[in-house]
Image (cartoon, rainbow, N blue to C red; front, top):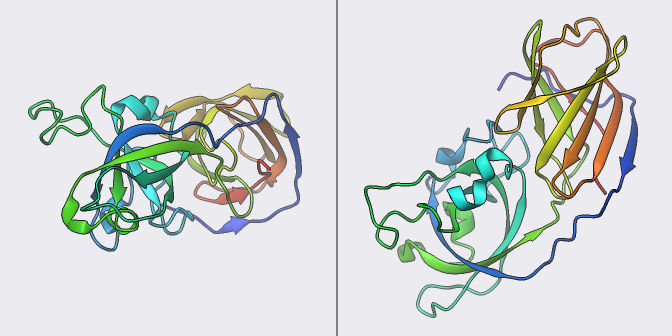
Length: 250
C-alpha cells in the first residue's frame, strides 16, 4: 500500500464515551483452522483492506472470519481471545489474541462438517498458521475452540491512509483500539463542516467532496458507540498515499 510514512502531527483528540466497550464477556464455541503458510505471507491483503499486516502493526496474530462473524466487513479490526478446547490430542494450553483482518468465504460445495468450515451459520476462525500453532498442533488441521470479544490494545494513534483522487477520497482506517471495528466515520476539511463518510469495502471509507488543500479532521465511531475525534490530523499540504496518525481509544 502506498504510504509516505506516518506523520505524527499535532492534533487534539477528544474521546466521547457513549458507553464503554465491555470486552471480557462470556465464551462462545466455534472452530479454527489455519492458512497463509508458516510465515503468514498468504494472509497479506484480505477483505478488510489492511494490505501489509506487518507494516500495519497487526503481525501474524490475525484471523479470517466466517460469514456468521464477518458482518459484511463491519467486524474488521475487532479483537478476539481464542483457546483450543475439548481435544486432548491436538490442543495446547493457553490462549491467543487475534485481530479480524480477512474474510473466510463459504464453500457451499462441501458439507459444513467436511471442508465447508466457513459456511453459514458456522462461527469459524481461519487463523494465520503461526498463531494457530500457539494453541494447537499443526497436524490437527481443525480444532474446536472457545472465543470471546476483547478490547484491542494498540500502540500509537488511529491511522488514516488517504487514497483515491480529487472528489473521491478513500480513507483506510487502521490501528483502532478499544472495540476495534469502525462502524461510522466522518471527515472535516478546514473550510467545511463535518461530513459523514460511507464505507466502501472493508475499513476503507469514502468521501466524494473536494478537500484538496485543506487540513483534515476525522471522527471515528466503533461498534460500542464510543467516538474519537482527531482534529487537523492531515495538514493542508497532504497528498494522496500518505498516512497520518490521530487520537486513540483508551
